[in-house]
Image (cartoon, rainbow, N blue to C red; front, side, top):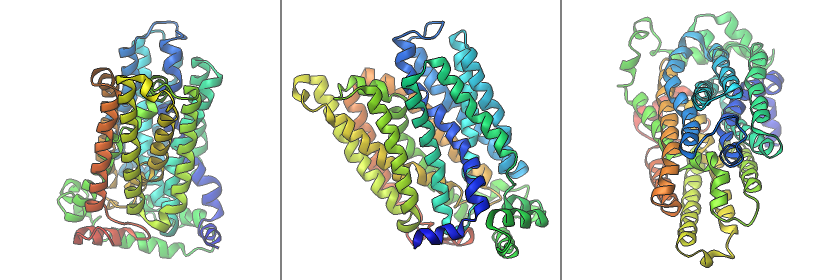
Length: 465
């Protein structure tokens, strides 16, 4: 019965075309994230490229994608209120496609690095703007479920690369990745601007048309326009258009920003991108009981299943509970992995029969990340900011996420070689524990609440209702 209610509230226009097209940008992010894991042994050990790449150079190849995402976040954020989420997404299809073209044509390490930087430009923009687009398009009742598709499509993009990485060489894998942003750009041309953007531009007729396209011709489009206008009252007056930074001094917006930056910080310091970017070599070093490539694909599959579970639960159990369960289980699982890896380093015979532990612990870690700490922050990115500062505030959160992803992906191989894999994963467990504390004390519950309700709650300092 609940499933039927959800389907009735998600009209055919939105379900059949808008959602898949919008989240194809997230799929493109996943291909950029996942690319390094299957190609690492092919580039470093098998020498599939026409030029040599050593371990330190490859670490920069991995990390520069995240650096590109951090650099582009602020320009993309500033573009959203001016161009709208739809047009901003179309604009950043170009650097994503150019990046893959440079990777395919690379004849030297600098050219390969430049290609990864450009794919990071596309990934960073998509990572920030797709949740905004989905948040403004979806109705309040199903916003959580729709928003979860963002992380799901990232996971599917990662799985896509993991699976194909076993079947094709580095060049063909690059071609298959390059097709994704190109197809996305072609399809997304036919998608509408969001009703919120059109109301902000004082274009009510097009806002009404957009809502009817999304919700169906019998939906109360005028009522939704009035709700959007109500949420903008007191925040988007003419005199406020040049004082966006002043908005950050208001309690509700400042608390929203602290919440988002904190969630992005703990998302990255949990070590997830170190695991995903280097999963194959982690499994190789851990002496797992199955082929490392198959273990990597298993991680990708469990990410998809975990995010599907999140989509089913996020509007029933709420954001906070999923975040708490996620960070707690991740802490326990990655701590167990750290202990195993330390024992392996000290005396491998102690763990000869325990090759299943790295697979089990990382499977739990990745699955629970995909249930909570992965999708929920991106969902809340489109929920908790006022519309007049949403683009800039989201950019600041995105800079934090990609900047820390760059740092973690660059520092992980250095830490692994320096202090060892065991202590490195124990550090990740410590950050997961701190994430639990942060969620319990700071993160608000936004399930089923309108933007106006969320702003009132943040302004009043009540985070648990």
